[in-house]
Length: 392
Image (cartoon, rainbow, N blue to C red; front, top):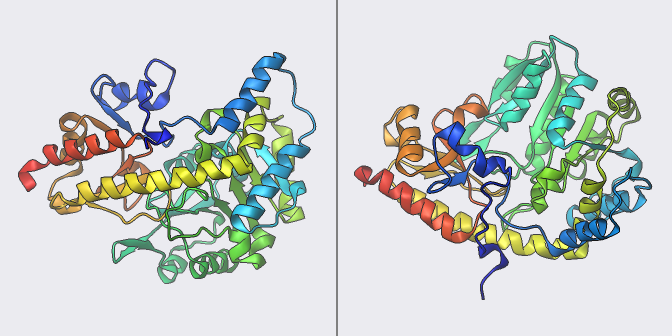
């Protein structure tokens, strides 16, 4: 039976950043190129989300949103049933997506000149927002052990200066695809306590976990972290509705909550009604069934893409436990980054994220988004094998 995710949908000419901007940024034309950079999916969201939008269209009046009780209950229900996290809806702030949530946290918990800690390589928007706000990025490099990223807290302690006020954790990790263990999350929380850091845990990829792995939300893994914890979650990655720009910042501690409320109130931020209706519909039993099917499909794409990449001598795709973003190491190819990037973009005609944008440790990598119909994933693998055929 053909999967609903096998349908090839032409997104060009639809104001789609992923497909319509890749020629300007990467020199890869959409007519014969493959867009594997921006982290959204080439799949339609579940029908329950489409139906919620259709109901809005049928009503035909798009006024201010009021009474968010159903929305908050949907968040509570999802986190409880999917992740075993019993959250209080009164702790939820809705932001204009989680990059906006990151910026609000930087404003709420740091001052200009303070430093913000990142475990690098990590999601590139963190550093961009931190730097734009006049704060310093404190990079603490992840280390590879048996081909997987690990944290080295002994070295991290030695790098701290006392100017750090905030720690941004990416859980699951983007771009490495790690699902952090309970012990690792405990160590992160202890590190934050040792250095008196507010701990912001961005868990936007929490639902996109490969079979055999389980994501643990920070408040479930380390309940005692609540006094310094800020959680960030969203429906946007899970259900491919990133354009709704709707995210949640969830803050258990009253003092931290008050500081965040002052910033968000001072900026006059309020959510858009389309995003709230979509998120409410998505966090439902119908949405859950769709996510289960999606994760199975993504795992198939992962196995296909990794298998084809790992057949190329000198290339290795990091074993992935979550997300739909393959992190491919080109260091064994014996090429400078400019050379392997040229082969991918000009030879294979694939737009992929440059590893340097993720901070220290990303220099020899490219990130490939395989949340696209399987035929495209296979085509990408074939093109990469041809582009590096002289290594075989």
